Image (tube, rainbow, N blue to C red; front, side):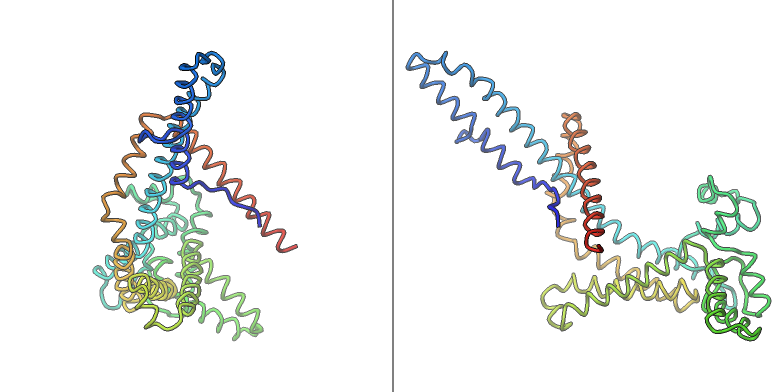
Length: 348
């Protein structure tokens, strides 16, 4: 396995101190200055003139290293804060859309999967060719043709045709379809027509995938994978009592994550008041758990001070900021390429 390049801000600051110790102690600059003073006392200062550039280089390099350390620490901290936002926004967003659907729901009416209105707008445009006047709908369908819209948001016409044929209930768009009920009906229909089990399953899966659309299908696969990986992580922790005693907030974050992803998987497969309601409850619980688990970092004034210092460094030294950002992008690309090569080597 190849080494992955990384930079530690503390290491950069320590290196800067070795070059130019700001508290007046040791350092290359200070030692050179002492050497120059002794040489002057001995009348040999001219002999050390070639070392003058070294002193200025050490001072400039030390300042550059401290700027880079400030930028890296601030950007890392900002990235951590954004990571908390990203981890909390997914469950809270699903809870919001699910709650909005529940508040508008009436007994006997269909309920949409908690994915927001984007897939619904795409499915409507893919079936009718008309874009609703809402700005959000125009944004969701911008630059997308009808075929791509159906691929992403689902096929409303196919969903209506199957629902009517099987008397499966009410629905207005593909995002309100129970994929389990639709898939089961398609499988039974194919079997009744004389198809083998495998052919019937493939046919049902194909039709169900077309109705669901790529966005909803990817959500099902992603949430199901999260359930499996999260459950494996919980099992690896061992005894729940011991895991909770060692890291209560971290353990509850993992538990609520598995619960939320399980509820979300069920709601995406078969949206109804029970599955969507569970998604709302578990989404709120997991979002709160994520924020609570990071409470020390989020309430620490130093967290925002580091971000502010980095922002100020960008303003006062934009050249270094752009250089560091460019090096980070190049380094990340190289690391990604090396990871792919390592994976290929492992396979071979």
